[in-house]
Length: 294
Image: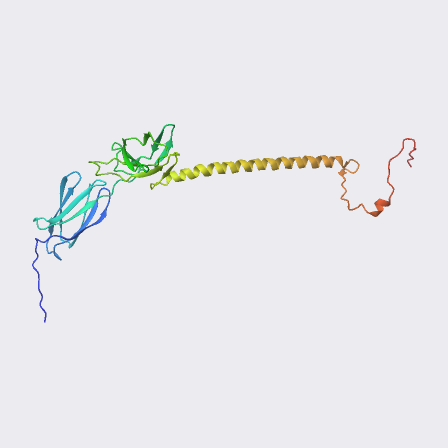
């Protein structure tokens, strides 16, 4: 035996399984299910977004009959903190969750240039890859002294460089550059970190690869140039030797040229046998011996 029971919908129940699907820099996609399965009419939800940093509230309304609801909250700020509350429009029980948006990226190509009594930090403008970043917001710079175990705030700037002075010899420093923190340091960008030692050499630990490629190119290009110069000198030496051999051969051939035969005569040494050794050597003619021509 069995019996079919139909439950009476209770609009005082909270939405079920509220969670975040995807979070970006300026938006968040949330998802939940209706208080009960297969609603037979449109249901009105109130989505309240509380900015925990700015201390402001926004309420959005969502009307749907679907059992599963997906909604995108827009116009959020990078690195923000939010408290999201979802409930039916009749102010029934609520479901809530917290969301942290993705902060701004770290500046790329953080480099150090050493001067006489100070160093200069350089980096690429964050506005080149972050459309949500305004240069007027600026950057802030921190320094960590590993020997003293002290972190210091050096200041902020709206430029793409920063001067650091009064560094101590024998100390190792780590510099960080990030989008300036807003609202008492609660909304910051990701930091780019650079290690600097007392010898003035820096090693980039940020995600940027541009600096490493530049360093490799600075080594490879001079090496290739030296190889090309060496090859050029080698070709010149070979060419001079070739010309010298040509000139020597030409001089040798001219010294063995016979105008009567119209050609040069060379002896390979193979025709010099025993008969030539036994033949008398002609030493020449004397001036007082008459020459008879038939």
